Every structure is written in C-alpha cells, then in structure tokens.
Image (cartoon, rainbow, N blue to C red; front, side, top):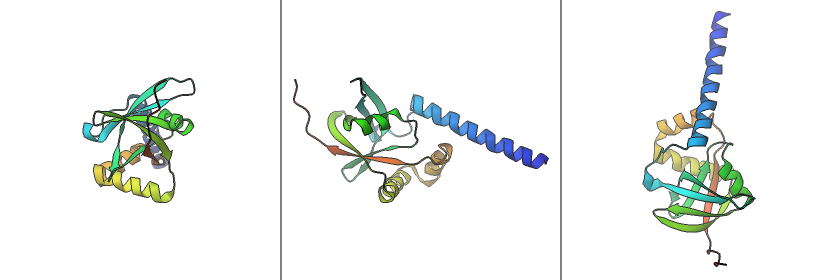
Length: 149
C-alpha cells in the first residue's frame, strides 16, 4: 500500500510539475532555439489588437512552418480566426496566410523536422514536459501585402 501511495504521489507531482512548466512556457516563451531559427509572429484578435509572439520557425526547404506544442497558445487560436499574419524573420517583415494543417502526415513531417533540429533526446524531453500535447503545424504561405489605406 505504501508503494502504491508513493507511486501515486510521484505521478501526481510529475503532472503538476509538467502543467506548471507548460503554463510558464506559454506565458513567458523562453528562448529555446538560436535567434536564427526564431521569428516574431504578429496576429490580430477580433478587436483589431495586434499581438506578437516569439516562436521557433521551421524552414523546410523554403516552406516555413510554425507549431503549437500545446492547447494554451493564444496565437494559434487567433490565426485560426484570422489567418492573415505577419512574420518578422531574419530582420524582414513579411505577410503570410497561416494555414493550420493537422493531418497525420504533416504532423509527422513537422515532428521529424523538430527532432532533427533539436536532437532526439531534447525533442522527447520537451515533448514529455509538455505532456505529449498534439503538435499543431501551421504552414505560412506568402501573400501580397494589403495596400495602405
């Protein structure tokens, strides 16, 4: 009985720790990649307010991907409602149409790209700490900027 109780407390402690870490990452977005592989995503909410989030950008031979590693990401929900976004990447601001794609093939492709970039150990460590939340890939398709009013 004592062993079962210890295992239950250990499991509960891990879940609480993972949720706290997940919330911390969601709020503070610490740097986990080199600045060369990061960008700043600009999304617009339903009130017209612009939000900026620093994110890892995955360059797949010229196709740019973002990924939401858990369900707390406000930027993911904003671009789902308004897919016209901007990305500041390598010092340039460019307009994109954000296309969320959550098919098993795309999730596997983006997951493999992340694993290659971070290394298998680091990738699985981060995935474990995020409680293996779904990877939600977003492809950024270039679009023409809107004309100035």
